[in-house]
Amino acid sequence: MNLRIRSAGATAITRLILGSAFLAACAAPTAPAPVEVVVTQEVPVEVVVTQEVQVEVVVTPTPEPTASPKSGGTLIAARAADMTGLDPHKQTAFSSFRVLEHIYEPLLNLDKDMNVVPNLAQSWEWSDDGLTLTMTLQEGVVFHNGTPMTSEDVKATYERILNEETAAAARSFFSSIASVEAPDAATVVFTLSTPNAALLAAMTNPNSGIMSKALLDGGWDPASEAVGTGPFKLANWEPDNILELERNPDYWRAGLPYLDKIEFRTIPDESSILAGLRAGTIDWALINDPRVGLVAASGASDLVKDTAPALAYHVLQLNASRPMFEDVKVRQAISCAIDRQQVLDTASLGEGEVVSPATPLFYRADLGSLFCYQKDLDQANSLLAEAGNPAVAFTVIVAAGEPPTAVAEAQNIQAQLAEIGVTVEIETLELGVYVDRWLKGDFDAAVALNGGNPDPHNMFFRYWHSTGNLNSVANYSAPEIDALLAEAVALTDPAERKAVYDQIQQKLAEAAPWVWLYVGYEYRIYQPYVENYTNMSNGQTIYLREPWLNK
Image (cartoon, rainbow, N blue to C red):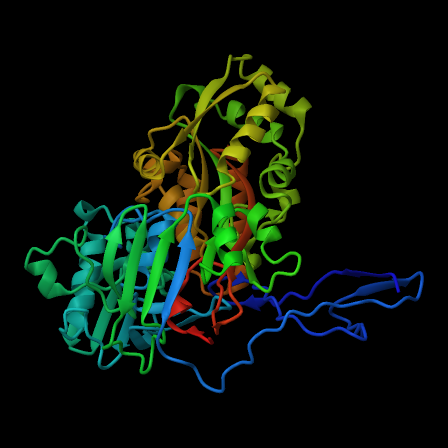
């Protein structure tokens, strides 16, 4: 039988006040002999039978699931880039988040469907006017040094984040907080200057991990020692080699984590990571390169390929403060000259989709409503002519390995812009150097992978509001965008909020300080004996506290 199946796929969509995202899960192999095709209304399937013959189906056996989780063992995990620092409030690299989120915990978390759920705060309540948020903390939480966590620690943490001298990466998320009070050990009261419908989603961010007030008051340096409340403790770190986490025996979630230890190995070549997975020397891997993700579970491999559509977005950032980009018509010409789908197809082999500035599904703008989202060389050349036909040349910085598609994206953009006479030089930097220059806004342009969030306020405000703490990275602001951002975050009705964020996206696309490109996938590849892992659209690996090794 020659069987061809064409499937649109089934997609689960969750619509929230805070935003939306969707996840796709990969099912375990089943034995399809004889072959049975089930057609449902949600998953259209076209079946063409041209000849009836015998089909030999090879099924790779997988371990039977255990009746209950097994405790113990070491998970050998691999990723291409090491973290760049220990202070969770200051980190911006994804590679740092993927470790620190196991050591430090925020007040709230996201579940696999991007719903806000309790974490260190077990419950919360808003006042009728939306200006007071009262949180009740979990009982029995202790820091890794054995001291209990109380509301005073939460108060001290948020005051540190809000202090401009800290240079906290997420400070803009919490700029509406006027004061934090700790009326008793289990209660925290946040008083806001203006309503903030995005605050709960912001409180799930790894950049808001709770720290010990006693340690902070005692001169402790979070950049040199990690002490959190998370399921794992930092046991050993050999930069760019091995990082070891050990189980926190006093973790407040009873029975978790199941693993005794996680050993993160830094292996810059993701093809080598895949080879280790296939050889059985690696249990679990965080894969960023879609070329590796596509082939990870091919052939007779029994590896689990776990993918989730990402909220993080690929983008070409133009520094509007540099002379070559001060004229909006030049920026617009660059936007018009770039075929975003071609960048996606070239760098990520089509693994993803072209996206608007807001990546949560519910808040995405119609691409047809955005300025020059389709390549138009005639319009690009006309805009350059209106700008006086300047000789446009610039250097774009890219990070080596994060993401692994960055150089290919830059090279494709370089070739496309040559069609309108724009000269692009590519400067590839080590990740730590890239992050340092990026934070300082020290670049003409940058190819970047920026984090998404279920709420667009937490994506937009820190870059595009004139007071945002990363506005110096974006190097563009406008009074009308400031006003729209303030309006949107105060609304609670999702439809009303979406209408305002659509306007913001239209204004950003027209001003073209950045050229938004596409979103890809979050790939996690692991052995079939790694049970009960949950992949997430925002890239977090917090649910490594829940898997066990069935071997």
